[in-house]
Length: 462
Image 1 (cartoon, rainbow, N blue to C red):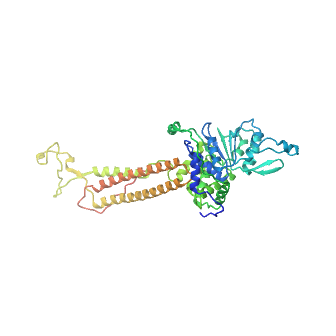
Image 2: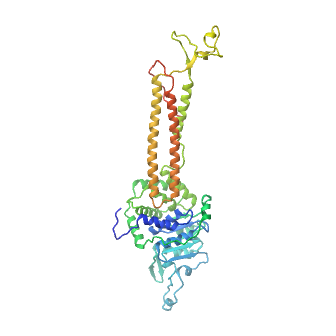
């Protein structure tokens, strides 16, 4: 995508370095690091939801080292007063009859801020924060001044249930669960050694603004629009509320995400981000992630049920036809003894009364019958081959697009690759079974006469 030189949108490689810097040495925090960097590019705020001791504040501090400017951090309680966030009253201004604050070093002068236990603050504090978060402006006496705020990173142990907090909660476009390290990664946590971080890449304010300007020119294709309509219906079914205002901000974020990946339109792969943009709780995020996986044809590990039923039907049919018998006749048209009974051959059984099975043999099938069976199987094999080729192309293409996307965590790419590989393996297993069945039909005894009648096609169970 062509950019004007003055805009200086950050190159994907530099953004990848910024993400790596934020996540460096932190176990299972890659997705959160990506959300932080993208939120800064979008000029949006991030809410981390999780217990203490899960590196939430460390992530915010690292984002500040990427963005620069001033950093502000506070733990909020219900006793927090405005002076702790916005600065004390200016005595010099009071002497001159002005009601102003000494804001230097406080939230109104910060570019990145971390507010811990943000929902513990009283309503007066939260209301005062709304204007700053929404408009990047601060009421300084009778004047409203611009604030250099890029992004507020807030943290909470839980999602607020009070209706009075919903408006403030909605101001955080990105919501990320931050959970303790999993059992699988616990060993890595024990091996972790704190080391000083070298300086990482710096994203200037001009570059952040350039990304937002570039995002405004990104197209949203019909396929993405249709997927968002589908997702909206799913969210409505699950009673997950997303305001119209939030949908507008979501699409803006998707555009910026695509622009930073050097693309001129939003791709379906960008919808991976939806789990962080529409969900309020971890279980909702998992629902949205599973929905996104479904868009890629990898919602779950599946057994190709239709193919399995078809193969089972042919298995039963060849068992029946291979074990079927018919009476044997000699050239004169009389029943012929084709097998020994009780160890005696035909000559020694003169005058005896052998069982009827002694006069039977494996059933012979006409060439037309065998050709019809093979033709039906060949058609199914061709269909399976085409399906497998499409799946291979789709799977490799989807995995490549996901891996190249700045905002998609490698753990999710691995999940998709494993699921698609498992599905391909199961299709291949059924393909091999069907090929064996075909060989068994081809080996059926051939009758000398051919009446030209084709058998009824084998039907799979519903």
